[in-house]
Length: 137
Length: 137
DNA sequence: GTGCTTGCAAATCGTTTGCAATAGC
DNA sequence: GCTATTGCAAACGATTTGCAAGCAC
Image (tube, rainbow over all chains, first blue to last red; front, top):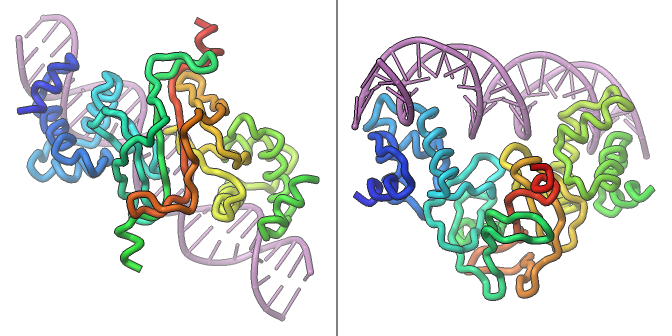
């Protein structure tokens, strides 16, 4: 019941829907799912769930800094429960997102100023073709 | 007529429309415009220009690696003519994008392998509130 | 009952597509 | 004339909105 404590930690009421979404995120942290993927996965076992609720929940979680919104994919927003500093590799062919260790030398800035700008998030992205897709052809 | 040589360099036919779009990009490199901003700016003096053409041209330029597509803004794709390695700061309040020098230690990977993945682009993004918006309130 | 959460239907907006018209060599 | 480029209208898909209904304490 990790999802329960997760929601409580962030002062969010643990509704049925939120628990399910949170649990999905925790179970699929490595795939960095889209809102639609979450909806499609949960919908069969939760017929009343709507896309709207999924979007609202994800937005709320992101506002509470419980999850991270990744804008690496131009087609749709991806979500990441892992908030430890790490980089991402986005495959342009299959749209899979891989986690990568942070290269030495780069600092993840948060809550500090940079050139007068207040930094809330740092993102390091690589884009290209992943090893799976390279192997295919 | 920088835009002309720019297009020729990338083996693209220098049509009237492409020249105008390229020129706009070169003149507004620091604002990292959206397709719609480009369209709105050029439309008055080029009444026949359509959004479609702007999108197609930008996609073509990006495919030829003449410009960079930035996915930092969740609302719309931004375009950058400056292909020298640098970081970006995205203001969540005013959506302005600032160029930032690359911090020491980080390498911009291109054309190399990383964990078996073939990297085509590296992106370093910071998000938060910019100094202009901080000063306002 | 009060207030937050959800569901619904519709709208919005960026972007893409198929195809016909056009322009330039 | 041939081929690439453009324009148009329509489609598409992700995301948001306003509002009414539902749920929980």
